[in-house]
Length: 116
Length: 196
Image (cartoon, rainbow over all chains, first blue to last red; front, top):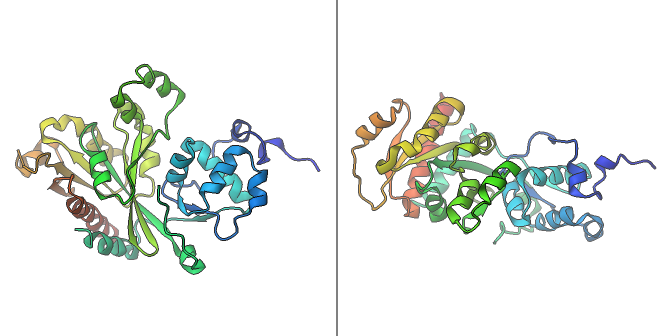
């Protein structure tokens, strides 16, 4: 089987990133990411170290920004590695609600009001 | 760092969603303080957007903290309810990092722009950015550094040449409850704009 080296998730991050600048719909810095309930230790062991670190950190749901900070990776690379794991179906993304959504704004109001 | 609560409830997990408010303003105006005051996790300082060019500039003086903070973004987290998390992001303060503001602001509910009445000019750039270059609702907040207002809000509005439709408030942002109130003002303003 011939693989396109640039798309294989086992190659080094700088190889992974080469020639690509974007992913699917852009991952926002506050988008929540997790492995869902299908964390796979065999897959984890097979990943390149950087991807593996990211995959392990995503066992607990957190934002793209938190993953970047916790893994010590630049934001751009974090996004690329997340989209690679998304492509092989190993991560879940919880897209944020539209910031214009009145129901969302009302929930924010209620939550913040409790803190005042 | 504590992560979001691990929920065995798959339905609730799949409903988890997030929102974002940006805390902007000039360097030293209290963005980190505001984020840290209300965040349930220690405010995280990360150098996420640091570019090679910036790295060369900033690493000339590795011992000076001030240099590091200018290239960093700070962020914090507030759990709003069982399935909604609010993230707060402080903007990097220096002009050379403004292109990154677009990335930071994309998808935000709104922005809180902090100003220091002793150094208004410090926040001109942030005010200018939200007035001209961004498309999110924004509220300006005078940081009452010692809990004391040194200027009338109307004077501040004039000095910043703030349009009448932009709300202007004052808060001692060291106090979590007052930060919550300021963020509430942002959400209220966003709701008004959403209704049109």
